[in-house]
Image 1 (spheres, rainbow, N blue to C red):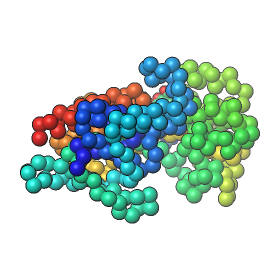
Image 2: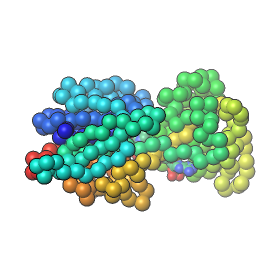
Image 3: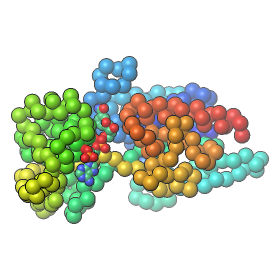
Image 4: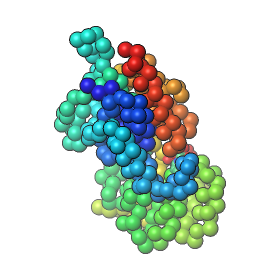
Length: 313
Ligand code: NAP
């Protein structure tokens, strides 16, 4: 029986672990992939106070080591469900069931509290054959896969900060980068747009949406349509980096933590849910700003709330 079980080892979950362990509680972090969450794919981190410049590659292991050196335990596995239980003394606890990477049932874990820091997943492009071509030209992470396309032509899709940063990253690697966005204005930061305008390898393809992935068995192009003129154009690219934002995958936990219409945990800044003992943290929570610093803030708040709850039961 642990005091605090944390689902997800991104910045939110790792911060919960640091606060929980420092608060003298036994902590288990459960993670289905590897620690770090989305930050692990971020090459430039310049907005985390106290560190002028770092990368997710450096920051994530440092957070992990901080949590485990304080005594937090770490286990691999995907949390597949949570049930409410009561022990022989009448005290409430939760049983967290798990499955492994190939979908087989894993061990059950018991904990007095659970912090759900499940993060978000990449939103798909939504075109036929997309899933089949993942690894054959379709990617959701330019910093992970970009080096495979050195000297080639690529497309980056989206207009948020991820798309802008992906385009900037690929501009120095690829021969040509088409930045395809459905509007004429970008959602991401103006300063990055200005830098991209100076890059000779980058072409903005605005007011345009992708309509067909070309190539078999690997990507050889992308057909796009201008939404104002209906004109179609084929971009001769070997890779398509999709940066359409992220979506939550919280369905497994909807019985213990209410979800909003978009599937995010419907909790306020307090990180509390309607179930005493269940807390939520990070990008999986309904919020307006998803940043590294807001994720770590949730981690701290949720762990302090969990400690307070444990001390009252
Ligand atoms: P995002 O801000 O939600 O942007 C997603 C982009 O994809 C938008 O431009 C959106 O277009 C487009 N899009 C979504 N669905 C689409 C569809 N079906 N068809 C065509 N276009 C579609 O996601 P993000 O860029 O991953 O950023 C997520 C959060 O992380 C943001 O708060 C961002 O600021 C933050 N972030 C920060 C940094 C940094 O500070 N260094 C780096 C990366 C991300 P519309 O604009 O038309 O809606």
